[in-house]
Length: 541
Image (tube, rainbow, N blue to C red; front, side, top):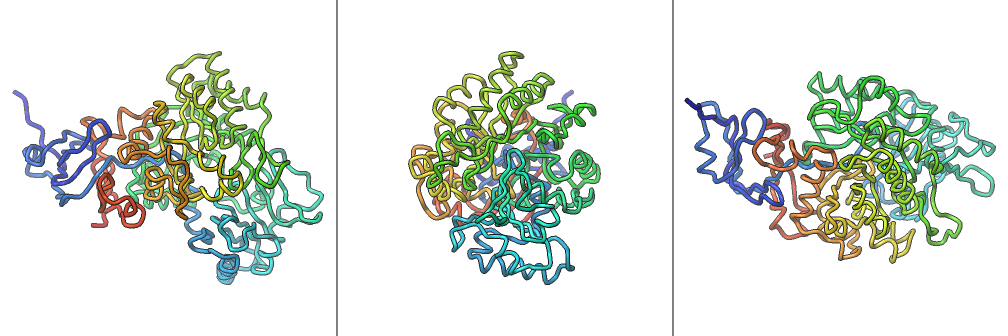
């Protein structure tokens, strides 16, 4: 005799978008953390038992929990305690230096002051702050001010002194030390930033766990239930793996995390992970080892992304090539041969060419048609490179928040003809490349609504319209944020859609993302309710 299953939870009377192919239903029933069934409110309520929890959505819109395809969870949590240097908080140099001085006033003398988020294009001065700017505001504390991208930073004199950086310091490979008239101006880019970071106190395990929990709860509040941590090991090496496991065991891991292991020479944690058996796929649906990452270039807005043509006004600058090609190809082959998926940072077309070629060679030597190597960011790929990605099963993994936050900067540093067509997610969608999306937080805010708005409109935060042919439909944009985020992690069978058997990761919004006026997506949307495995983890109703 069969026994009817009673749902643990039923959400009804809503507009529940289950996936691009599945469309809308009124209700969803959940059992043991997974979707039991979807359908009409009447049909789902027929699964109600004495202990079933019932939530009336009151006509509101719900979707699968969003999947941020690339962010830095620990850093996002930790930097929430830093000085906010974003254009919204500090639109002028005076406001920025005042915020630094205010933090210094409450920090013991000699303690480090860290800030992040400025964009020189959006500052009133139109330039990077300098060592002297920081010295005037904060003379008695070491200061490290990071650009939004994280690939450029400004240090004051005390920070440079503690890092042992002088005019005579050799420039590290893949780095830049800024000089003006032969004197340090405080600017450090790419690998040169590590000179100052080496002088900072080590981040403790407790601080790492706190960052995981704080950042994860913030993601929950935005409707995000899964993310990729894009460079595990960047702050504290292999200790970050321990922190994640400890956070999970202690119930302090609020989101599903796909771990991307830092593989750059000299700071790689891959060998430690390999010895511990932590290869791609190890773990569970809450915490899983994903890919290996190496950095091939910098950021476009910071003029360090490796391009094949020079930046506007700088005929000798094509960005920064982080590693020589033979080394990249050897690293990729080594990781590929050991079974790792790869998710490497490449923004400029020069870096993308280097990376795709390395992937192609590794796949030719050791075929795996479903490895799904990723190109992180993939900002300025060519049509020929896109076709090669399609042929090799390589996935572009862009962060469309970049269009909202940095689109005008791309035009400024590259010109309209090169800047506007960047991050061509519409082309990738039409090609069947299954592009995902994310924020690269703390580079951009993980807030999904500017991201969705940019995908749908191709508008920057200032209203500049980038290449209109790269727009997505509402359904395509949501698919990128859900199903294709899962695909990029080889998790499409367990999350990303609201279908029977998949995890009941659900986000409920106060605005209909499919039907509401476009501008209200950006300015008038909140996440009201977030569920992870059928359990409420955020409730703002």
